[in-house]
Image (tube, rainbow, N blue to C red):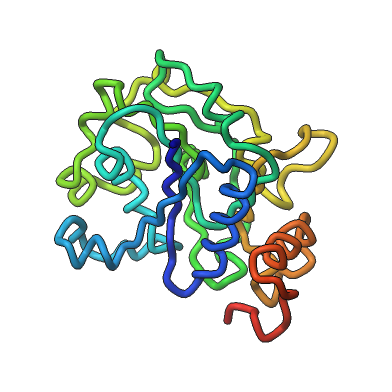
Length: 234
């Protein structure tokens, strides 16, 4: 059973649930696990101060993925605002043991300072590289990523994968972390894994984003009912 760890933000439960449903529907042999900050705090695993620049509750806890997975094998992490359009085993099959991690190496520089759900849009090099990650947990460098380090080191050190040399970061194609409304078909290819990085149709002011219909269709498959205005996240 392959494992996918998914970021979780408490007021966006439906976003996580739809992401999980889409991944597991396309990949019956894959299991999703939420990374819930409050649970990690309650257990004393995560204790650092709230990240004032973080736009999600998992902005830093995502880097506990190696520890949560027991530092063995290949696992995947993704943000909660994703939607699988195909079997993620296709992504796992690209795993190359010479790399510590494999990511889509976006050159993504948003011009807005605030996301559409009102969260701060933080700018930094390698932005969005850490939003979908294939982790090689048998790589010796990843043994460095412990709860103590995650609780103490700077967020930029983590998001920029600064414990690794450049040649230890493998590259995935854009289709596996397709930034909605940033990448366009056919110029950038065809998506396999959507990422509603600025917001999706679950937000009032983003209901007409690209691929909104796919997200709404997944919601209806999951719940058996259409997504309505009453379901919008405030």
